[in-house]
Image (cartoon, rainbow, N blue to C red):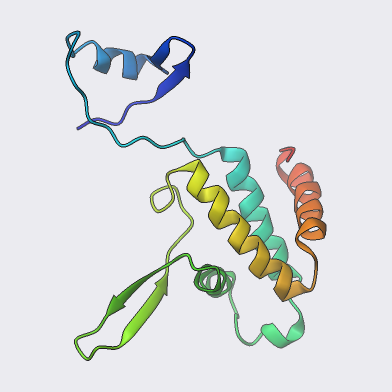
Length: 151
């Protein structure tokens, strides 16, 4: 099984790069191909998300400092509160939840990432006492300063 990049055009799907073109040549006209389709993650969105977590952690009220002594612990708490987690049931019947990372492997689709970004934004805004719009404006400004990435 191969992962290839395709680009949607007015006439259909075309290979997005040379590797994909080479792979597509292996198939004959009429071959039926089964694929899981997803929109590739956007690096700009990823940068904005990392800025969101970084700036929220830096500006947390003191009452949260003891809860999350590291940014890693904070990120896990945000993921859990935002519902970006997996549940399992122990042999004793207890339900446990553990947070998932926001990396490309766990969220390979940009559309899914956008939904998770919004949920995390709501958690972060609540923690630092800002509206979503105010927090989004601050994060956009910071991301531009740090990465030269416009939101």
